[in-house]
Length: 324
Ligand code: PEP
Ligand code: MG
Image 1 (tube, rainbow, N blue to C red):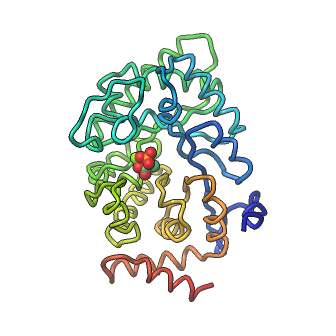
Image 2: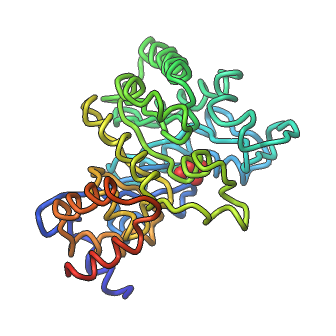
């Protein structure tokens, strides 16, 4: 099967009925990025900036960050890279940063909350991303957005850095897009307003599932308890992609869900056209898309969501085995 996936490397992910998907990869270390060519990812849909911070003893300054982000952009060889700002806290505690002991770290002082309370952290990251890009486009994505106001505040911080860079002689990025992750239920409830403010959205389905069902994503008895292919969760995913369409912005999925073939097909059927996943998932997902009929599947899934409750997993599986 390895060879089979390798043979698909340069084949675009187009379904039998002509629906074109952009399959991108998630990365956090330079070694991940080096897989990009081999697996044929169209870009990096999620670069987790906290990962290199996690492995360092010292907190990297702007120069160190600029060098790191520059190397990521270089190894992506002209393909789009979406840098997510620091998603520290929760389960990701940095050695170089003082995290308070919290009763509920997943609900704690983390991610964008830290960035808004200590804007220097966010500003340094954004400054490094702009400097590293040179004239290349920059895509910045903020994690754990709970309210539209938080997103506006994050964008205001990015704007400060844009103004700072514009006052300097160096070249500016051709475009700077700022997107929001949708992974907190309160953002889902304000999705139309958020979609109007953001340049793009990306669903963090790992956290969205955890927070929607109030089930710890890392707990042994809780992690796989609720199915992302349940009508309820698919309906949440549908609302997000439809809000993106109304606002005319791109919406992707970058949680683990996007990297499983059955889930990826369901997401495509709901209208998602960009999926970001671990490098090893690109081959299997692409293979599933190449043999699928997305428009037909879309009719089936939307109809099933109206008629059924609970998980659609088995229902989808039998539909797909009947429609090969
Ligand atoms: C997610 O929450 O789905 C996500 C992509 O981000 P992380 O797994 O890093 O929280
Ligand atoms: Mg997340």
